[in-house]
Length: 239
Image (cartoon, rainbow, N blue to C red):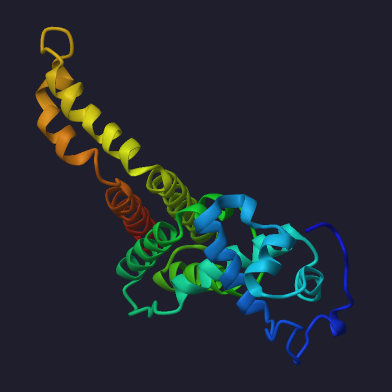
């Protein structure tokens, strides 16, 4: 897609295309998401999308101005899927942990799209709602506004970064993933204590742990630190 603006009022069509497809923004995003997982970033072309949708490629400009516009919609859809079943309980720490794990799982469910979109700021409906919910959770817990934003920033960036990191690993061919896992057993587990005492002492833990994502542990560390900061703030204000 290249830049080609269609007036907003003319973007939606209710009647089917010549191929019998009734296009919608949702259908285009869903199809693009599927194609990205199958073919990578090269899937985002008017020709390929039109072919997959059974529609004239030019009709896509009624919904998206260009490829980047569509990429932002895809990023926002991934956020929306994360939020769809998240229900805050009032326990801020447990709620953020659940949301973080959902964000990470959502990235792994669409690894190629996650790698492409993790660094984007969409300014769209689902992202705005996510920002509102997370900051609201932190303010409701008692964090001062500046601290709430600071922790929000760290929380979101951590989830997105781990999502992209682990998604990149998931997107590797199975043989490459297996080979990297094997390095811990075949190389690190056999380093001698005389030259690498700390690796040798922890080798069995490295073999058992390094094959898995460290995101849950990193998330717990972040939330524990946040709770400690909140306790310290309360102690200062009460004192």
